Length: 235
Image 1: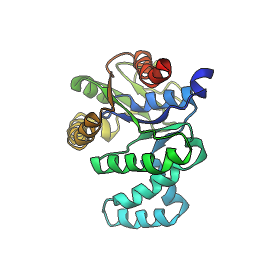
Image 2: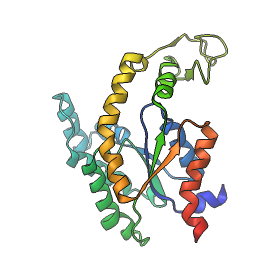
Image 3: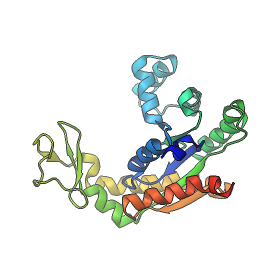
Image 4: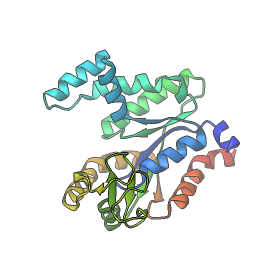
C-alpha cells in the first residue's frame, strides 16, 4: 500500500453502465492511491449549495428545465482539478460524457494542468468495465435500499440477514423507482447511445483499456491495479 500511495497515477476515467461497479472500484482506487474521486454531479451540487457564481448560473438554468452548458461544466471541473489534492492523480466519475468533453479534458490536462506541475503531459487512463447486459439487469433489479440509513443490499449478491429488512436499523427495504426493470432497460439503452461515442473517442486515441466487470469484485480490482501500475513496472 505504501508503494501504491507514493506513486503518481495521473488522471483515471472509469466508464461503465449503471450497475457495472464503478462506484465500488472508484472508492478502492481512491483508497489505494490516496487520490480523490471527483463526480461532476457532486461538483455541480456543491457549487449550487455554496451559491458560487457558477452555481447560481447552473441553478437558474436547471430551474428552466435546461441542461447546464459545457462551458459552465468545464469551468467547475477546471476549478476542482486545480485543487492540491489532485496533484498525484484523480478519478473522474460522470465526466466526460461526450467526445467534446473528452477533447476539452485532453486539452486542459495537456496544456495547463500537469505541465504546470512540471510532470510533463499526463493524459487520462480510461478503464471500461464491461458487464454482460443480462447480468446488469439482474444486479440492478436485485438492489434494495434502506431509506432510513441509505444502506444498500442486493438480494442476489449481498442479501440482508432477514428478507427485506435492513441489518443495521431494522427498517423495511424498498425498491427505488430507478431500480425497476422497465426503468433500468431505458437507462441502459440511453447509456449505450450516449457513451458509445466517448468509448470510440478514447479507443481511437489508444487509451481505452477494458476489464472484465463480470468477475468478482476483488478480481476486478486486481485487473485495475495491473492497468494502473503497468508503467511503473516497465520503468
